[in-house]
Length: 130
Length: 116
Picture (tube, each protein chain N blue to C red):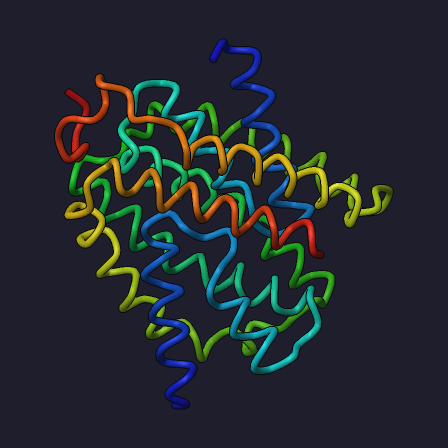
């Protein structure tokens, strides 16, 4: 197995299992090193995520960092949203939407980055709710 | 964050996942944080939300022939190794730092999205 594959997939698994999945390392590797078409790289990244996520969820559940009663409603509505998303795929120019979405992420990320830590949340490691 | 906004944002998680194949987790984390979860718990919860969505999206991508399962197989073994380490590693990172890293990640993803 190619060393680049080993390293990139390890880092991608590491990051996505910590919750940093969206701008995946794997896509960077696939696009820059292999120059594959966008939908194919997206698909590979998606499939890759599944076993990584399953393992992560099991681990987080064991560490009591996950409560399905909380996540279930969000998941349910997300699935509904996905249905709409797939319908919309045929009608909406995604590059327009991605600019809007990207812009929103950028703004939100910047505000989070420069936000002063609130006293309430700045003590402790944050491993569990107090 | 009131219930209606939460519902709309949750729907949006799936919407963006279907359209872009990614990005939903970035919306999920703030939702969970608004419910009082710590940064770590929110990130962990986001993964559990994105998992079923990803399964659906992947199935549809395969059905539409955007890629083949064999394309991805080579990356999975060490991806799994990384995924075993991640949840253990994240416990050792203080929430304050994690929040900043996540913010940087949002910025990076945002720029990526704009440049699509």
